[in-house]
Amino acid sequence: MQAELLKFLGNPMFGIALSLVVYLIGSFLFKKFNGFFLFQPLFVGMVLGIFVLWLMSKATGVNVTWIYTNLYKPGGDIIFWFLFPTTIAFAVPLFKRNDIVKKYWFEIILSLIIGLTISVIIMYFISKLIGLNKSEIASMLPQAATTAVAMPIAQGIHGVPAITAMACILNAVIIYALGDWIIKLFHLKNPIGIGLGLGTAGHTMGSAKALELGEVQGSMAAIAVVIISVVVDIIVPLFANIVHL
Amino acid sequence: MNNKKETTKKAAPLLTQLGIFGVILFVSSLISALFPANFPVPTPVIGLVILYLLLTFKIIKPEQVEKVGSFFIGILGFLFVPSGIQLAASLDIMKHSGVKLVIMIIISTVVMLVSVALVATFLIWARNKIFGKKEDLDKE
Image (cartoon, rainbow over all chains, first blue to last red):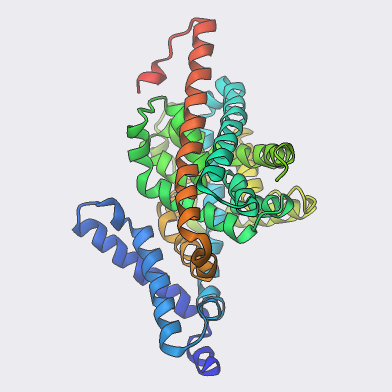
């Protein structure tokens, strides 16, 4: 079975086509239902895509992870690669509001350091309250950093890198779908604060969301994505040490 | 210096713009490889800093990268689909304590957004209080 699957679907075309089709279905539903948040194209695409892979696994009796790695990933990786230039592209909105960066650089850095420290402490106690075990808590703490930075940190503090990666991905999806709503709910008004928060919580996707809200928000989110990874790199292992994770 | 709007400036050809991105990515990947494994700095983050510096020091003009950049940012939702589908490989983890983890991730996302935003709001408020400047920014 696996050999036949590889013969027909083992090239990148399947992954690319599946990604495009599920996302376009999402876009269609999103328009049709006047922007209902559960029909965000990314969210629909992700759920449908996983569902298709799961169906294929049920139909063929092959394990989902094998299907994902051998049939979807070759194409998915090609699309994923374009996230690199996209992250770089956020330098343009950042540069356009250089006036704010020059004026508030100290407040920006301090906000990220203090904000992250507070977040990590709150996350630690809520994780304990919910009843996560030690390695799961350790996997939760580094999620403010981008995936590539967060995974090795999780490893270093005895967490599970795969869970951390999952957290980073879900952060982006949640911010993309619910960012506006959270901002309203907590009456966040300061554009610099909103931008830094979106960049910290939603990574690159948070920056895109912030850019929709305004130039200032977008540039602040872009700078947050860069600085927060360094902050996480320093603060999270330190905190893990203090609480003996 | 004439103060024409930026949109009237001529954008560089697409291939030139892509070329700039390509070279920056390549150089960033070389720099990223220099960092030790326990202090990783990913290629795209280095690239963002390099492009920002090139723009700030006026080596590259915004119109030389803007068109391609906005295109990529515009399709970011789509580019993220493979990362989302990647979770198919984590279905086993989800079976274990998936619901708890997902709830915790949702809470964490809200906590990070709100605490950073509130701290920043406070610090900027305090700064304006100390220096006595009115910022029209806050009322945007």
